[in-house]
Image (cartoon, rainbow over all chains, first blue to last red; front, side, top):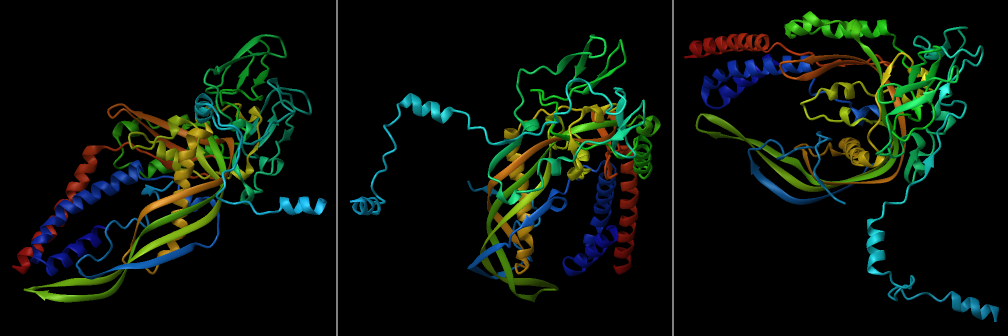
Length: 95
Length: 425
């Protein structure tokens, strides 16, 4: 993980503002090490994966989509606020 | 004449015409109807009629010295060694059937609403000698008569939520649980709090039956959001740098799915249901699921030698939790249909309709090692699922050791970064 992060920093540095970004590697690596070890000991992010571990029988998904706009030029590589994989993050509830 | 009467009766009714549904109610009656509690739904009567409160004897020799034999998950008479087991509730009460036809809220007798004024302490009259024996149902459902040594059991329904519909017996033995906990902790020694390491005695692990509500449900969920599909990607030169740009089509995305869930398991004790980070309850939640299909009819002899925790949440309190979990399940079900949106999807609105649900209360077996960390006032657990052996825990950390490790790695990386910068200058 740290190696990957380091590689990314090198790539980022060469792409943008020169190699000065490399100086962030130390603090970023330290924070990542602390976070990974703390999580391994305390497991405070773990919970029962009921979405996967429950017996579920689903009918075929009903889909409908309609093109509403076109973005002709953006630097964002993905949509803002992508929550398609955060199944437990609740959004506005329709009653 | 008869034909004419039928003809009149079959004339189509004007849909806009008012429907007469009796004289209007008074304001007081309307208000009373609005404030009234909803009608109780249908229930399933899950009662072990062969057992009663007090003495429950071995069917072969009549001894009351009966307890669970962990290696076989069967009840055993300690006097004559006869072994037997209760029937599985799955087949006995048809709990695995009819999920597709569920309507409304069906509550088993052991999951019914808890009476607010019900006492936890119950006094039993010993059937052997007549002495009064007290059982604190908050922690146990058996007691031994201090005069004649008979074991007394609470088997009949109590209004305080202590007696569930079913119990899943312990399968892992104490020795196996100690081994699991030792293995878990030994992988986390280096940065563990020194005091935790010094005081670590896995043999102190306790067998606890924790209360859960096991739910079958039929639901439909719908989601509305925005998705983007990349149509073009290109790079432009800006001075010395190159910048990547994207073009994309934006879509309004609708998805809906009908599904059933079988044996969704939710904590029945409020003290175990808080997952706000200041507790370590998530540890006990993580060792789910249990093989709840193997749960058997209630018999408190399964609890002899173990402690138990009483259910204190009602079905009504837990409906929002069920809906929340069903929404998450629905989201995971529709996820596979989003592959075309390569720039991602942002869900903005969601809806769930629970067409039917069936609630059964169960005691599920957990080996629990707990450690109270005094400086942070936090109770840490290492929990073992006493059916599957899944183990999860929270080990208190030594902050200065963690910081030292982080600083070492940070310094090493910074050194490499400095070397590269100097070399490229």
